[in-house]
Image (cartoon, rainbow, N blue to C red; front, side):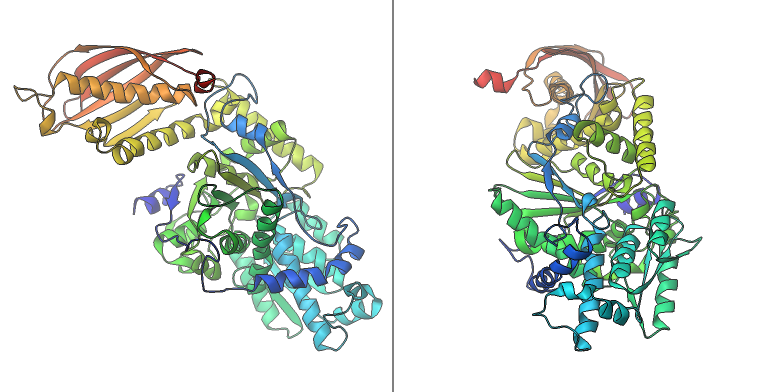
Length: 588
């Protein structure tokens, strides 16, 4: 498969799941994996305990804000500068929001949902079974010394790259459990230091996440008093994450934000082993059904879920099996093998996966900080790349699910930010900061969108009849190339390619590049001048390359060359002028 080949070569990919489906409305599936209502009720019972132990959680409910980020949206779309001039960027016609699980109380990451929930459920089960607690009690009694003494005889263990370990470690220590976190080599040092400061035993491994989990599981199985939080297979973790979907539905309803067939919801979630994004996706699909589209983001060096789903092998294949090193700056996503539970659950629920190069994480981080004064960690920034591929309409809602960052030490935040700015400045030697990040991806997306419109949506028009067979371009060189197979019906009376068809090929290619620079404006042709050099034959392919020579506010000037793919010889040249018409002002 081409996508698997690209994954092995560490190339960025986008995969649209052909099996994603959900009947109209909710729920998304008759098959219930977890009981979301039961999980939410349990979290409500624990609210008094959470409020007493963690006073910053004023109502005892661990939930994050959903904030609109219009300045970041403008920067990504090239309508507002980060540094330097504006530039064309992503196409995001709807509204863009950030789900701040990065700022969830207690542990500052999405893992506060599932990780804390599982430990709370364990504590409840033990206390109820011991006759010390009933569901009708005020759970703040769990802070009494008699409960801490009771819980201290039990152990909790978990394997983690970082954020899950923080959540499990902090809440387990607060309840009174003995807790051990097995951490892989990918985990940040500050996370290990923070856990140790709270009395958590941290066991470090020179190997990857999978090795840490395996060792933690073995040790727990040998101790009947130890509960192992299994990030790969835990239904309790999954249930805790899934509550997010129900709460999101209530929040959007309260805000008057409608999600239906005319107002779609697009959600972009960073993915490691899959537990957190899988549970959140499950909850979203249960409450929004076919009107919600969820996508997982992974690093190019650790795309375990994408590899498992695309091949259909799920957890039976690891990135190391195909030669991928699993080393990434996105430490929370540095996982080699996906969760079987999540992979199977996502077969008909997840809409797609995409991968992102580590080099883009820090620039996204710096852009968000500059435009919205919000900090999230590098791995959370992987989600932004999905906006390159998914566009939607002007009535749609896009949510970037920020998975962590608030607990990062200030010196680390500064280092991450500076790395992003330095990357942008280096790339900005030939382009603006926004160009450096989104210019080429935006051009690639524009080309793909244009080919889809020509070949599929307009297939009965001259645009479609031209059957554009390939498209590519260079943002740096300001070029765009389309290839057109020369068909029998396009021949003139002597059997060569008709001159009018050559002019049409020029117009389709040049217009596509002109529209890219026009952004949201209309770009009508003012003039096109074609000079013919030599004939082209039926059966050959005409390769047309357009180049923007001047991109002003009102006028775009372009040149183009058409050549034979079989011989490489020049067939014709063209020069053209297009106008950028602001349709908003024209309508006014």
